[in-house]
Image (cartoon, rainbow, N blue to C red; front, side, top):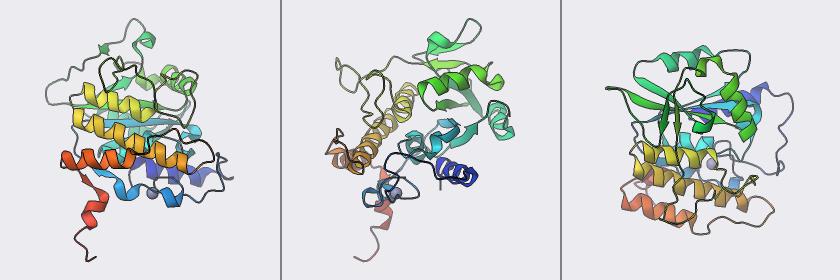
Length: 260
Ligand SMILES: [Zn+2]
């Protein structure tokens, strides 16, 4: 189990009632949280990355089957996930932030940075010997702003900000996140933001892979709910083709030497 799956289990144990999400009668895979018949666990990618991600998750966000923060953890081995609290500072979070091997930065629009904060605008400058630790504030946009403003231990950290780039030049970028309809179409899902950041960190293959993995999740998710599927029907094929082309192992490959 990765960090988000563990956090989901923990958060679930705190709940006295079942979290009521859309499609709550659906029987879900415990790991990817998709309807069992549309589970994507056997397709999960195995890659390496110099980057780490720290997800600070707002209250019930981790319980929502539509959460895409978990897709980052599927891909990036060094992903950490914690529940955000307004009143308590988590010692594990503080330890990560002061770990000298990491250079932590908050992924957030520069417009909110204020005057005294360092901003990495469309570029990341790493100190020698350090790996980037990207802090993602995972929740609705309103919740993310609350985490940003109300966490004392984040106030001294730089912000990393980017101008979203569409995969093809000149194409207008819009979120492919049909699962939760945002007020405008350009509000990106957490996994889409992480893909943009990986590209900024020089990991273009991982960035593309995360985008494709997001498409797989989005399409399979929509198959499990009673609404029009606006996802990409060839998402799984596209993802597998990209993985094969780039010699990326996916979970089901590791079972191929079993007798058929
Ligand atoms: Zn699954």
